[in-house]
Length: 636
Image (tube, rainbow, N blue to C red; front, side, top):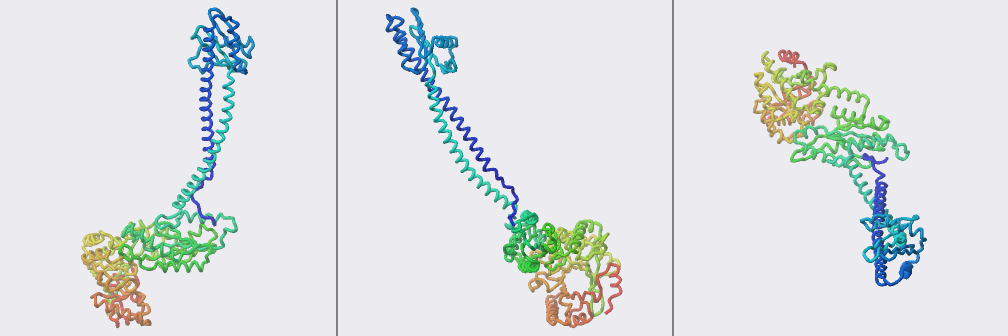
């Protein structure tokens, strides 16, 4: 398949340059001939005119020396003088006080008389070069000498000038031909050089237009051209039988970019590019569409190989990258589409892969192959993303609550607030259907403040009703980078007259990819307000003693992955037992998530974990339902 070209190439530049050089050469030749002709004409004419003056002066001198000679003797001398140019027609007239004579050579009397009349009728011009008369299509030069004892008029044909012009014309022709061929050679040489430079510039501009300056990868224009070439290619030798298209998106690039600046974001993109290129080999091509979105075009790659390539890309990207002292791991989501399995239209293939990627990001499972139903879900998500602004403005985002239960007594010691979207057309939506939309819309911090405000309002109202159960809510570590978050929380608490101990904040461990030192100040400010901190999903992320020591959490929540098979899995029981001991060492409370059976609850109590949260006790419920449950308690 031919390589994409974006900029049109001007193939006429060489011909136009040759034409211009030839035109210049003709112009130069014409100027040269004209100037040379005029210069030669002036020189020859002056020589002729000087010869006339010399002849008339000689005649005048002879007349003065031979005053005793007869008129016939003088005429004979003049005739002899004219015969010195035997082939040149001429006439010489002498007028004195004593006599007048006309002597001609190769002219009859009538022609001689006509020439003399033409000369005497002409007013003497200022420029001697204009002393020319014409008779019978022949040009004659003339001169009248009145400086001596006689008036001498000498007229002769300009044969010397005409002969000289014929001789010069040959020289001019030869010179013009030489100049012309030099110009042709120069035009060909210059056209080759300039055409080469133009091709180089065009190639550089094409490279600039079709490649990303940051990573050096081909860009969206390159991909569009490549797909367009594939669609319109009729050559059997260039056709491909199949191809895989992979769309890659970094999971939390926007948060990193917004939190640490575009410089760090650019370095992250370059580092990720280098890692992906270790598994993407020719003829496959890695292309950057823009932002944090990449594409792998894999011609002649089947769907099975496409799936394996997606796994390899996720594997090389799922490691920590050290940038500016920060340990960053955004992770990737990959969508796979196959030509012609999913579509025989290469332009639609991109949309299929994009839908699959979006579905993988939504399900948080790394990679997905395109499915028709995912396209419908994608269209639905586009609609939801457009409705996000109104969702917070119209208070459509509401809180449901799941209790935290003391498994020994059934008392509800706290609740976790979980967000739901009460959509006016689609009904009640779960977080999995819109949280990713919020993260990719750049409204993470606005959403965090909204949830905090709603939780404070609920807790304040409950307190007025005599319910003193604290409300815990999840925040992304990126919310803690909001420099005004602590002042916002303080202001909202004061507005609703609510003590800080009625609110708890849970930080989801397995979603954080930030260096703890960069969110430490935000945590400290919140702790100074009097709000407790909990580590959610403990054990699935970057748990370490240093992490716990820096975070100084009040509560550790053991992730449900360790609880689901707690009864049968000895390793998970050991992990839970270690977590309980660790919590006691740090003076932390401990809560087990995802408790669904009585056996799990009893085993947890035996291990020293007394507070649990899960479907065994209650699912998330509305405000009215949780207040009723708090008052009634949970049966154990």
